[in-house]
Image (cartoon, rainbow, N blue to C red; front, side):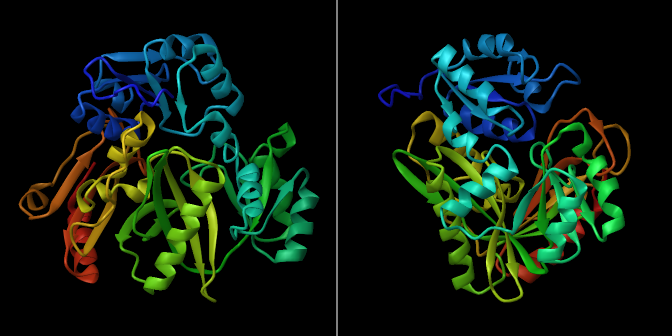
Length: 388
Protein backbone atom coordinates (compact mmCIF):
# COMPACT_ATOMS: atom_id res chain seq x y z
CA UNK A 1 0.00 0.00 0.00
CA UNK A 2 1.20 3.50 -0.78
CA UNK A 3 1.18 4.95 2.73
CA UNK A 4 1.33 8.49 1.34
CA UNK A 5 -2.21 8.12 -0.01
CA UNK A 6 -4.66 9.90 2.28
CA UNK A 7 -7.75 7.73 2.88
CA UNK A 8 -9.63 10.61 4.47
CA UNK A 9 -11.14 11.85 1.25
CA UNK A 10 -14.70 11.47 -0.06
CA UNK A 11 -13.76 9.41 -3.12
CA UNK A 12 -11.72 6.83 -1.17
CA UNK A 13 -13.37 3.41 -1.43
CA UNK A 14 -12.82 0.62 1.07
CA UNK A 15 -13.86 -2.80 -0.22
CA UNK A 16 -15.13 -5.68 1.91
CA UNK A 17 -15.10 -9.29 0.73
CA UNK A 18 -18.24 -10.42 2.52
CA UNK A 19 -21.42 -8.51 3.28
CA UNK A 20 -22.57 -9.69 6.69
CA UNK A 21 -22.94 -7.84 9.97
CA UNK A 22 -19.19 -7.53 10.52
CA UNK A 23 -18.72 -5.66 7.23
CA UNK A 24 -21.75 -3.52 8.02
CA UNK A 25 -20.44 -2.50 11.44
CA UNK A 26 -16.97 -1.76 10.03
CA UNK A 27 -18.65 0.27 7.30
CA UNK A 28 -20.23 2.52 9.93
CA UNK A 29 -16.72 3.62 10.94
CA UNK A 30 -15.63 4.06 7.33
CA UNK A 31 -18.62 6.32 6.71
CA UNK A 32 -17.70 8.39 9.75
CA UNK A 33 -14.29 8.98 8.19
CA UNK A 34 -15.99 10.14 4.97
CA UNK A 35 -15.02 7.04 2.99
CA UNK A 36 -17.19 5.14 0.55
CA UNK A 37 -17.73 1.40 0.96
CA UNK A 38 -17.86 -1.32 -1.67
CA UNK A 39 -19.14 -4.79 -0.84
CA UNK A 40 -18.57 -8.15 -2.52
CA UNK A 41 -21.47 -10.39 -1.57
CA UNK A 42 -23.17 -13.61 -2.56
CA UNK A 43 -25.94 -13.79 -5.13
CA UNK A 44 -28.73 -14.93 -2.79
CA UNK A 45 -30.76 -12.98 -0.24
CA UNK A 46 -29.34 -9.44 0.24
CA UNK A 47 -26.82 -9.32 3.08
CA UNK A 48 -26.72 -6.62 5.79
CA UNK A 49 -24.03 -4.52 4.06
CA UNK A 50 -26.21 -4.30 0.94
CA UNK A 51 -28.57 -1.92 2.75
CA UNK A 52 -25.76 0.44 3.74
CA UNK A 53 -24.05 1.17 0.42
CA UNK A 54 -25.08 1.37 -3.25
CA UNK A 55 -21.73 -0.10 -4.29
CA UNK A 56 -22.25 -3.87 -4.31
CA UNK A 57 -20.66 -6.45 -6.59
CA UNK A 58 -22.15 -9.96 -6.46
CA UNK A 59 -20.37 -13.20 -7.20
CA UNK A 60 -18.79 -16.35 -5.85
CA UNK A 61 -15.56 -16.51 -3.89
CA UNK A 62 -13.90 -18.43 -6.74
CA UNK A 63 -15.15 -16.07 -9.47
CA UNK A 64 -11.96 -14.15 -10.21
CA UNK A 65 -13.59 -12.05 -12.95
CA UNK A 66 -16.27 -10.79 -10.58
CA UNK A 67 -13.67 -10.24 -7.87
CA UNK A 68 -11.51 -8.20 -10.27
CA UNK A 69 -14.52 -6.04 -11.18
CA UNK A 70 -15.03 -5.48 -7.47
CA UNK A 71 -11.34 -4.64 -6.98
CA UNK A 72 -11.54 -2.09 -9.78
CA UNK A 73 -13.95 -0.05 -7.67
CA UNK A 74 -11.73 -0.13 -4.54
CA UNK A 75 -8.67 1.65 -3.18
CA UNK A 76 -8.08 -1.00 -0.48
CA UNK A 77 -9.65 -4.42 0.05
CA UNK A 78 -10.20 -6.19 3.36
CA UNK A 79 -12.01 -9.26 4.66
CA UNK A 80 -15.23 -9.80 6.56
CA UNK A 81 -14.78 -13.58 6.67
CA UNK A 82 -12.09 -16.16 5.98
CA UNK A 83 -13.95 -18.30 3.44
CA UNK A 84 -11.99 -17.18 0.37
CA UNK A 85 -9.04 -19.29 -0.80
CA UNK A 86 -5.57 -17.84 -0.19
CA UNK A 87 -4.54 -18.44 -3.82
CA UNK A 88 -7.56 -16.50 -5.06
CA UNK A 89 -6.78 -13.63 -2.69
CA UNK A 90 -3.19 -13.54 -3.95
CA UNK A 91 -4.33 -13.59 -7.58
CA UNK A 92 -6.81 -10.81 -6.86
CA UNK A 93 -4.14 -8.55 -5.39
CA UNK A 94 -1.51 -9.28 -8.00
CA UNK A 95 -3.77 -8.92 -11.04
CA UNK A 96 -5.68 -5.88 -9.79
CA UNK A 97 -2.79 -4.05 -8.14
CA UNK A 98 -5.13 -3.11 -5.28
CA UNK A 99 -3.75 -3.57 -1.73
CA UNK A 100 -5.37 -6.36 0.29
CA UNK A 101 -5.25 -6.51 4.09
CA UNK A 102 -4.64 -8.82 5.78
CA UNK A 103 -2.13 -9.59 3.05
CA UNK A 104 -2.51 -12.89 1.16
CA UNK A 105 0.78 -13.97 2.72
CA UNK A 106 -0.50 -13.37 6.26
CA UNK A 107 -3.89 -14.85 5.42
CA UNK A 108 -2.33 -18.05 4.05
CA UNK A 109 -0.67 -18.74 7.39
CA UNK A 110 -4.05 -19.01 9.16
CA UNK A 111 -6.42 -19.73 6.26
CA UNK A 112 -7.16 -23.25 7.47
CA UNK A 113 -7.00 -24.77 10.93
CA UNK A 114 -4.11 -27.14 10.23
CA UNK A 115 -1.86 -24.45 8.77
CA UNK A 116 -2.95 -22.07 11.52
CA UNK A 117 -1.87 -24.40 14.31
CA UNK A 118 1.40 -25.24 12.57
CA UNK A 119 2.10 -21.51 12.17
CA UNK A 120 1.54 -20.69 15.82
CA UNK A 121 3.34 -23.82 17.07
CA UNK A 122 6.44 -22.79 15.12
CA UNK A 123 6.21 -19.38 16.79
CA UNK A 124 6.29 -21.00 20.23
CA UNK A 125 2.65 -20.21 21.02
CA UNK A 126 0.92 -23.02 22.95
CA UNK A 127 -1.96 -24.49 20.95
CA UNK A 128 -4.50 -27.24 21.50
CA UNK A 129 -2.88 -30.60 20.61
CA UNK A 130 -3.90 -31.57 17.06
CA UNK A 131 -3.23 -33.91 14.17
CA UNK A 132 -4.23 -34.05 10.52
CA UNK A 133 -6.70 -36.90 9.90
CA UNK A 134 -6.85 -38.72 6.56
CA UNK A 135 -8.82 -41.81 7.66
CA UNK A 136 -11.07 -42.86 10.57
CA UNK A 137 -8.25 -44.95 12.05
CA UNK A 138 -6.31 -41.74 12.55
CA UNK A 139 -8.90 -40.58 15.08
CA UNK A 140 -8.37 -43.77 17.09
CA UNK A 141 -4.60 -43.30 17.01
CA UNK A 142 -4.97 -39.69 18.16
CA UNK A 143 -7.30 -40.72 21.00
CA UNK A 144 -4.71 -43.28 22.10
CA UNK A 145 -2.31 -40.39 22.70
CA UNK A 146 -4.70 -37.74 24.04
CA UNK A 147 -7.74 -39.66 25.27
CA UNK A 148 -11.44 -39.55 24.48
CA UNK A 149 -13.40 -37.58 23.52
CA UNK A 150 -11.75 -36.13 20.40
CA UNK A 151 -12.94 -33.02 18.58
CA UNK A 152 -12.96 -33.66 14.83
CA UNK A 153 -13.00 -30.51 12.67
CA UNK A 154 -13.08 -29.43 9.06
CA UNK A 155 -9.80 -27.67 8.45
CA UNK A 156 -11.53 -24.88 6.52
CA UNK A 157 -14.97 -23.31 6.60
CA UNK A 158 -16.30 -24.21 10.05
CA UNK A 159 -17.77 -21.65 12.45
CA UNK A 160 -20.27 -21.44 15.34
CA UNK A 161 -20.14 -25.21 15.77
CA UNK A 162 -20.57 -25.98 12.07
CA UNK A 163 -17.86 -28.30 10.76
CA UNK A 164 -17.16 -29.81 14.19
CA UNK A 165 -18.06 -33.20 15.67
CA UNK A 166 -17.17 -34.47 19.13
CA UNK A 167 -16.22 -38.14 18.89
CA UNK A 168 -16.61 -40.03 22.15
CA UNK A 169 -15.51 -43.54 21.23
CA UNK A 170 -14.08 -45.74 18.51
CA UNK A 171 -17.48 -46.86 17.07
CA UNK A 172 -18.33 -43.21 16.29
CA UNK A 173 -15.21 -42.54 14.23
CA UNK A 174 -16.35 -43.65 10.79
CA UNK A 175 -19.67 -41.78 10.98
CA UNK A 176 -17.96 -38.58 12.17
CA UNK A 177 -15.32 -38.83 9.45
CA UNK A 178 -18.04 -39.29 6.83
CA UNK A 179 -20.22 -36.50 8.29
CA UNK A 180 -17.46 -33.92 7.82
CA UNK A 181 -16.66 -35.06 4.28
CA UNK A 182 -13.50 -37.02 4.99
CA UNK A 183 -14.52 -39.75 2.54
CA UNK A 184 -14.89 -37.04 -0.12
CA UNK A 185 -11.38 -35.73 0.38
CA UNK A 186 -12.15 -32.83 2.73
CA UNK A 187 -9.17 -32.02 4.93
CA UNK A 188 -9.87 -32.80 8.60
CA UNK A 189 -8.01 -32.51 11.86
CA UNK A 190 -8.42 -33.96 15.32
CA UNK A 191 -8.01 -31.85 18.42
CA UNK A 192 -7.68 -32.91 22.01
CA UNK A 193 -10.72 -32.24 24.16
CA UNK A 194 -9.56 -29.66 26.69
CA UNK A 195 -11.20 -29.64 30.16
CA UNK A 196 -11.03 -25.87 30.37
CA UNK A 197 -12.27 -23.64 33.18
CA UNK A 198 -12.97 -20.64 30.96
CA UNK A 199 -12.86 -19.62 27.31
CA UNK A 200 -11.03 -16.37 26.69
CA UNK A 201 -10.62 -14.04 23.73
CA UNK A 202 -8.40 -11.11 22.75
CA UNK A 203 -8.60 -8.72 19.78
CA UNK A 204 -5.48 -7.15 18.25
CA UNK A 205 -5.31 -4.26 15.76
CA UNK A 206 -2.00 -3.74 13.97
CA UNK A 207 -0.38 -1.95 11.04
CA UNK A 208 2.94 -0.26 10.20
CA UNK A 209 2.11 2.67 12.48
CA UNK A 210 1.31 0.80 15.67
CA UNK A 211 -0.39 -2.00 17.55
CA UNK A 212 -3.42 -1.99 19.83
CA UNK A 213 -4.28 -4.95 22.07
CA UNK A 214 -7.77 -5.07 23.56
CA UNK A 215 -8.61 -6.37 27.04
CA UNK A 216 -8.83 -10.12 27.56
CA UNK A 217 -12.50 -11.15 27.81
CA UNK A 218 -14.39 -14.26 28.81
CA UNK A 219 -16.72 -15.83 26.25
CA UNK A 220 -19.58 -18.08 27.23
CA UNK A 221 -20.80 -20.55 24.61
CA UNK A 222 -24.21 -22.18 24.24
CA UNK A 223 -24.61 -24.96 21.67
CA UNK A 224 -21.22 -24.03 20.16
CA UNK A 225 -22.29 -20.39 19.61
CA UNK A 226 -20.84 -17.47 21.53
CA UNK A 227 -23.73 -16.15 23.61
CA UNK A 228 -22.12 -13.83 26.17
CA UNK A 229 -18.89 -11.83 26.42
CA UNK A 230 -17.66 -10.43 29.75
CA UNK A 231 -15.08 -7.64 29.72
CA UNK A 232 -12.64 -7.78 31.28
CA UNK A 233 -12.44 -11.52 31.94
CA UNK A 234 -13.03 -12.21 35.67
CA UNK A 235 -9.69 -13.96 36.17
CA UNK A 236 -6.31 -13.13 37.69
CA UNK A 237 -4.88 -10.00 36.00
CA UNK A 238 -1.65 -11.87 35.30
CA UNK A 239 -3.56 -14.46 33.29
CA UNK A 240 -5.36 -11.71 31.36
CA UNK A 241 -2.00 -10.16 30.50
CA UNK A 242 -0.61 -13.54 29.45
CA UNK A 243 -3.50 -14.02 27.00
CA UNK A 244 -2.92 -10.51 25.62
CA UNK A 245 0.80 -11.23 25.18
CA UNK A 246 0.04 -14.46 23.31
CA UNK A 247 -2.45 -12.67 21.02
CA UNK A 248 0.14 -10.03 20.20
CA UNK A 249 2.77 -12.70 19.53
CA UNK A 250 0.34 -14.52 17.22
CA UNK A 251 -0.31 -11.34 15.23
CA UNK A 252 3.40 -10.67 14.92
CA UNK A 253 4.01 -14.27 13.85
CA UNK A 254 1.89 -13.72 10.73
CA UNK A 255 2.99 -10.08 10.29
CA UNK A 256 -0.69 -9.20 10.36
CA UNK A 257 -2.16 -5.90 9.19
CA UNK A 258 -5.78 -5.37 10.21
CA UNK A 259 -7.84 -6.65 13.11
CA UNK A 260 -7.46 -10.21 14.42
CA UNK A 261 -9.41 -12.22 16.97
CA UNK A 262 -7.93 -14.99 19.11
CA UNK A 263 -9.79 -17.58 21.18
CA UNK A 264 -8.09 -19.36 24.07
CA UNK A 265 -8.77 -22.10 26.59
CA UNK A 266 -7.82 -21.51 30.22
CA UNK A 267 -7.10 -24.94 31.67
CA UNK A 268 -7.52 -26.18 35.22
CA UNK A 269 -3.76 -25.91 35.72
CA UNK A 270 -3.70 -22.26 34.63
CA UNK A 271 -2.31 -22.94 31.16
CA UNK A 272 -3.57 -20.77 28.29
CA UNK A 273 -3.89 -22.55 24.93
CA UNK A 274 -4.64 -20.83 21.65
CA UNK A 275 -7.66 -22.52 20.07
CA UNK A 276 -8.59 -20.52 16.96
CA UNK A 277 -7.94 -17.21 15.24
CA UNK A 278 -9.86 -14.96 12.86
CA UNK A 279 -8.31 -12.45 10.40
CA UNK A 280 -11.17 -9.96 10.85
CA UNK A 281 -13.42 -8.41 13.48
CA UNK A 282 -14.82 -11.01 15.84
CA UNK A 283 -17.99 -11.60 17.84
CA UNK A 284 -15.96 -11.44 21.05
CA UNK A 285 -15.05 -7.84 20.21
CA UNK A 286 -18.54 -6.40 19.71
CA UNK A 287 -18.52 -4.98 23.24
CA UNK A 288 -15.80 -2.55 22.10
CA UNK A 289 -18.33 -0.45 20.17
CA UNK A 290 -19.48 1.22 23.38
CA UNK A 291 -17.04 -0.07 25.99
CA UNK A 292 -13.72 1.03 24.47
CA UNK A 293 -12.31 4.34 23.30
CA UNK A 294 -11.87 2.87 19.81
CA UNK A 295 -14.01 -0.05 18.66
CA UNK A 296 -12.64 -3.09 16.88
CA UNK A 297 -14.55 -1.93 13.79
CA UNK A 298 -13.01 1.53 13.77
CA UNK A 299 -9.57 -0.01 14.23
CA UNK A 300 -10.33 -2.41 11.41
CA UNK A 301 -10.85 0.56 9.12
CA UNK A 302 -7.91 2.48 10.55
CA UNK A 303 -5.37 -0.32 10.23
CA UNK A 304 -6.18 -1.45 6.69
CA UNK A 305 -6.33 2.11 5.30
CA UNK A 306 -3.02 3.21 6.83
CA UNK A 307 -4.32 5.26 9.75
CA UNK A 308 -2.87 4.97 13.25
CA UNK A 309 -4.73 2.49 15.50
CA UNK A 310 -6.78 4.05 18.28
CA UNK A 311 -6.83 3.32 22.00
CA UNK A 312 -8.38 0.09 23.31
CA UNK A 313 -8.87 1.47 26.83
CA UNK A 314 -12.23 0.65 28.40
CA UNK A 315 -14.53 3.56 29.24
CA UNK A 316 -16.18 1.80 32.19
CA UNK A 317 -14.95 -0.91 34.58
CA UNK A 318 -17.31 -3.58 33.21
CA UNK A 319 -19.09 -4.44 29.97
CA UNK A 320 -21.24 -7.42 28.97
CA UNK A 321 -22.31 -8.28 25.44
CA UNK A 322 -25.11 -10.77 24.82
CA UNK A 323 -25.88 -12.12 21.35
CA UNK A 324 -29.50 -12.05 20.25
CA UNK A 325 -30.32 -15.30 18.46
CA UNK A 326 -33.29 -16.00 16.25
CA UNK A 327 -36.09 -17.87 17.99
CA UNK A 328 -37.89 -19.17 14.90
CA UNK A 329 -37.79 -19.15 11.11
CA UNK A 330 -39.47 -16.32 9.22
CA UNK A 331 -39.31 -12.60 8.50
CA UNK A 332 -37.32 -10.62 11.03
CA UNK A 333 -39.34 -8.67 13.58
CA UNK A 334 -37.79 -7.33 16.80
CA UNK A 335 -40.05 -7.19 19.86
CA UNK A 336 -39.94 -6.36 23.58
CA UNK A 337 -37.17 -3.76 23.62
CA UNK A 338 -39.04 -1.27 25.83
CA UNK A 339 -37.07 -1.78 29.06
CA UNK A 340 -33.73 -1.93 27.29
CA UNK A 341 -34.44 1.37 25.53
CA UNK A 342 -34.95 3.00 28.93
CA UNK A 343 -31.81 1.55 30.50
CA UNK A 344 -28.82 3.89 30.76
CA UNK A 345 -25.69 2.49 29.10
CA UNK A 346 -27.63 -0.32 27.38
CA UNK A 347 -27.07 -0.48 23.62
CA UNK A 348 -29.06 -2.45 21.04
CA UNK A 349 -27.69 -3.58 17.67
CA UNK A 350 -29.90 -5.28 15.08
CA UNK A 351 -28.01 -6.56 12.05
CA UNK A 352 -30.61 -5.99 9.34
CA UNK A 353 -30.96 -9.61 8.25
CA UNK A 354 -34.23 -10.02 6.39
CA UNK A 355 -34.88 -13.57 7.57
CA UNK A 356 -34.66 -14.87 11.10
CA UNK A 357 -33.67 -18.47 11.77
CA UNK A 358 -33.62 -20.36 15.03
CA UNK A 359 -30.14 -19.98 16.53
CA UNK A 360 -28.98 -17.41 13.95
CA UNK A 361 -27.10 -14.34 15.18
CA UNK A 362 -29.57 -11.51 14.58
CA UNK A 363 -28.13 -8.79 16.81
CA UNK A 364 -26.60 -8.11 20.19
CA UNK A 365 -26.88 -5.88 23.22
CA UNK A 366 -24.08 -4.36 25.26
CA UNK A 367 -24.47 -3.09 28.80
CA UNK A 368 -21.83 -1.02 30.59
CA UNK A 369 -21.46 -0.91 34.35
CA UNK A 370 -19.20 -0.64 37.36
CA UNK A 371 -19.47 -4.23 38.65
CA UNK A 372 -19.07 -7.32 36.47
CA UNK A 373 -21.50 -9.59 38.32
CA UNK A 374 -24.23 -6.97 38.51
CA UNK A 375 -23.75 -5.98 34.86
CA UNK A 376 -23.87 -9.63 33.76
CA UNK A 377 -27.12 -10.25 35.64
CA UNK A 378 -28.80 -7.14 34.24
CA UNK A 379 -27.61 -7.79 30.66
CA UNK A 380 -28.86 -11.38 30.70
CA UNK A 381 -32.28 -10.25 31.93
CA UNK A 382 -32.59 -7.54 29.27
CA UNK A 383 -31.50 -9.86 26.47
CA UNK A 384 -33.95 -12.55 27.54
CA UNK A 385 -36.86 -10.16 27.04
CA UNK A 386 -36.05 -9.44 23.39
CA UNK A 387 -37.59 -11.59 20.66
CA UNK A 388 -36.29 -11.87 17.11
